[in-house]
Length: 299
Length: 301
Image 1 (cartoon, helix red, strand yellow):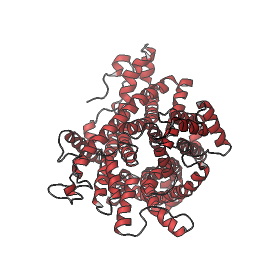
Image 2 (tube, each protein chain N blue to C red):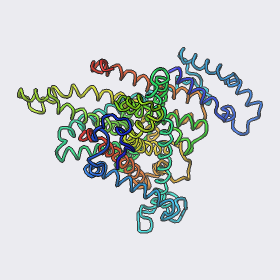
Image 3 (cartoon, each protein chain N blue to C red):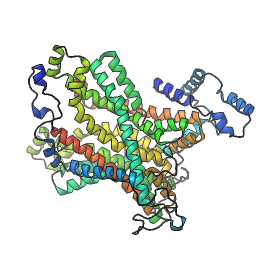
Image 4 (spheres, rainbow over the protein chains, first blue to last red):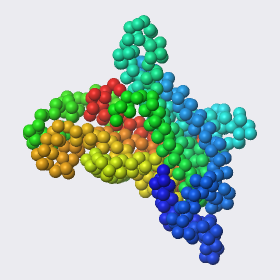
């Protein structure tokens, strides 16, 4: 994590364009540029700027946006009020898609309906979430006028807020769900050919009951791992989806900051996302080992 | 055609490796014909490549030619897929976008392979601290999805095709390193490698003659799958404005522009969307198919 923070900072600090010049525009006098550089602390040596930045993050101060002059913590906080629920909803939609789809296409793998499910699944993987998002906007938003095509009015009106998040969450979740669904299918196929499932059938359980009572539990282990990894994918996907639906979340903030060369905001958000990815990967590792002790023994 | 250049047992005197264990009989062609993924994937992928090559020398109209007299034209005999807000021919723009996408995808995959494969081989061969170091470094890079790298690069240098290629390539390096390492570790633990080492064959020679040919199928499969991810990433990053700026004909840009005019002409959104999905689907299926073909034990999974 520490190494990651150094990389982010150094790469961004050595860039060619000087933030002060960008902020003041091309008409700025050299003295004004110097003054602002001073004020932003950009004249200090790189290592000093880095120490200030990391020190700030550790003590809870994310710094002040170069452009708006607002503390980043506040801006990021209100952005996360949109991104957080969006990712959560996306995960939910993903699960609702993945589990039935995967189980169905595995159980029926030898019949036509299972093949159809598999093909649908492949197509689901091939359509990127932002493309699906745009298609949903066109069909549901523009043609049918059922849901808003973008924008966000805030949580003061929860119904309207959920209506705004519904399409983006579906766009995010369906694609992630299709990817996870493939793994569910593999896991269920494994379980179906296992000895203990045959035993369960032998003692008189119907195929359906045997799968629900003995099979799905064992499916959970690999699926949970993939789900964890996909959570990282959801966060990244949310950045793109927010821009599609013009939601005022973290992703929109990130891309605006890139355009404005608001370095410190870019640094904070990039580091935050990288941290989420690292933490999730680590957590998945731990959960994986505790769910299936055999993995620990193999190592 | 055998993937192995020499019969290893002839060189080292070790037990011949049964053909099933590596890639031999029954022929690859036979397995290809029995894998629906491989057939459909090959057809779509070949189609994409053909379109890209054709677009280099010929498109119905110039992809950049503006014709304000014929904006938002419906699909017709003149413009098979209609025209956009500047009267540019959609089919021509899609074709020339195929070329751009494929170029960016292939360059970033090959670039990532050029760094990731040697790194993976090194990690497998050396083990110990240097090997661990390579692995940790790969983990670290892995924490930065292509999108974040592109954001950082775009803050520095502005959006361009190069930004996208660099970001995607960097994101793929750890994938190659991991796949290569785990594949190479498997081969290195085989008896004939031990025998070769006992005969005094040098490390680099073992890697080149024994390890590389054996992990080639694995790597090629991975490359195909990553190509589909690259196409996807390219479209997404260009859509976000981190890639080639307008008026370039790229799928991501076409989507971005079409979204602004979706109230006027929703069809403009549909064409690039379908094209991207078809292209990703093609490379995905080809990758899955290649895996079936190269590694029959994984069939039906």
